[in-house]
Amino acid sequence: MSKKMKTKKGFNYQASSDLPKLGKIKTEWDLKKLYYKSDKDPEIENDTKATELAYDSFAKKWRDTKFANNPSLLAKALTDYEKLSGMPEASRPGRYFGFKSVLNAKDEKAEKQISLLSQRLRKTSDKTVFFTLNLGKLTKPEQDKLLASPVLAHFRYFLERLFLGAKHHLSEKEEKIIKLKSPQAYDRWVSATEKIISNRTVKFKGKTLHLPEALETLDSYKSANDKKKLWTLIKVEMKQIGEVAEHEFNAIITDARSEEELRGFEKPYSSTALSYEDDEKSIENLVSVVSNKGFKLSQKFYKHKAKLHGVKQLHYTQKYDAIGELSSISFEKAVEICRDVFYGLKKEYGEIFDSMLTRGQIDVYPKAGKRGGAFMSDQTGHPVHVFLNHTPSFKSLETLAHEMGHAIHAHRSAKQSPFYDGHSITTAETASTLFENLVFDAMLEQADEKDKVLLLHDRITRDIATIQRQIAFFNCELEIHNTIAKEGGMTNDELRACMQKNLKAYLGSGVEVVDDDGYSYVYIPHLRYGFYVYTYTFGMLMSTKMAENYKKDKSYIEQIDKFLLAGESDNVSNIFKQIGIDTGNKAIFSDALNNHESTINEFIKLTKKK
Image 1 (cartoon, rainbow, N blue to C red):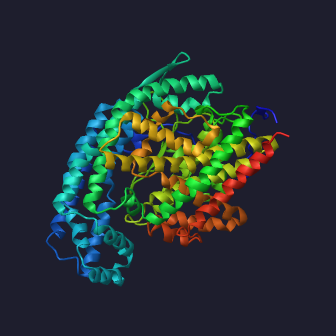
Image 2: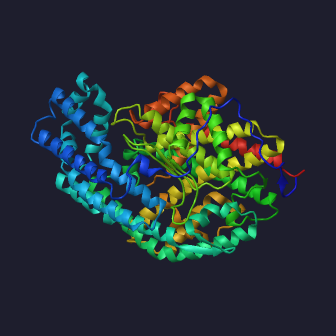
Image 3: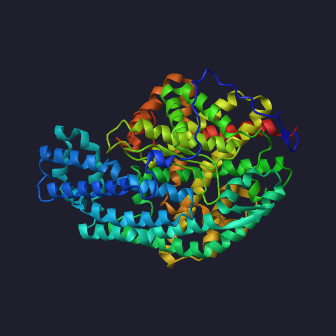
């Protein structure tokens, strides 16, 4: 096999059926139509006042009422509380200014409004803190009585979660203090680093690139020398920003550990497990399996990939390099492919996508000042939004499918009531990677022999980035937490070294990871999210099982939809059990990795030099 495989120009994807006519696509968020006409729209103040009034009314009605031990009275109180939690007026102003700030990091007015709104609404929400704290003080027999009450059947899972977390509650005054300090102790630190990254630029090939744009386009350069040069420029900036990130990490992690100790959490990820409706043992099983079996697989792949490139070690920027040339995929083509897959799965999924495309709910292209990366945002009573930085590549097609998986999940779970119309982080990442997998499978089915090899390669690199890379980040974050707690802090150089070590652990001898590559810790936002990263791995492995089940039996789409519709109406383990997957069994993670292993072995067999 040659060092560079080439395919015919263009990927000839053919839609499997006639798709409904699609209206005009809007590639920018239409905030004026969906939120407010301007920053001075009087509806902003009207919504904020309506929120304050609603919270005041709730507090006056229930604060001095003995609702906790009376099931019928509690049912009425919880009905009011659920209505309050789903109030769109409460979150609309914050969403509007938040979206403006990610579209333009230089929008200082939006940042100031977010701060003012946060201060104002914190005082408002403080008035209802008593409600959950009073319920949390009930004895175990009193809790059991409420959970068994038929009149509280709808609220059973909400109460189960509340009682489970109640052991970590502080006093009302202490809870208010925690909320009061949060913006300074966490939000502003993280925001400062993001803003610095968004505003920094590098000059490359006659262009001035903001760092998020440079990071997004790095893999699009075909020349290895271009990648190396651009990556070197990026690392220079990251090393300098690291002087700030060092203080950011020490501040936010020291603050997090202090609060966790106050609440009685034993491990750095204990509060994450509780918050994500997961359990510590499941997380530990996942991390153990991937850190051992998973890392051996990624090391094996990269060792072979280096041979394909004719080198002993790949440069760090070459880890995602294609072994041949697939045609670029425009956003319009990516839309066509996703529409075909979504409509083929279930008509409702395609209709959700079409609606978001034409209503200005997907912001597509990178531009100066725009934050890097991609995300989906949803909240009760509001339109679902998808944020992209699309470039004409297969990777961007996968990102679109991933974020739309989140969006479809959000739309389906919106059929639940406000208490349950969300989704745990773990099930959310399962939904996103499921749709990503299904779009890939559709592409693979139509590929010729050469394209199949290229697509298998790209799938493996994507899976490694989602499975092994994220657990490497988890291990890095855990080491940072433990080191700061033990030694009182970490320097920029120590943080860099920690990241470098954990990158080497999953990449192995096939990829060269030099000292300065460790400065990538600076721009990886999820390292600030309290062990969020494991959910990507969990989601990918579980979605692989779900995709396998669907390929064997197309009627499994009804189980998939059952999963999406469940929202946050039960814990992670039970939601998966409802569709035949036992996440409490350690073997499920190893079994899910078997598919990944088979793909790697197939790729090695197809590309092995004879």
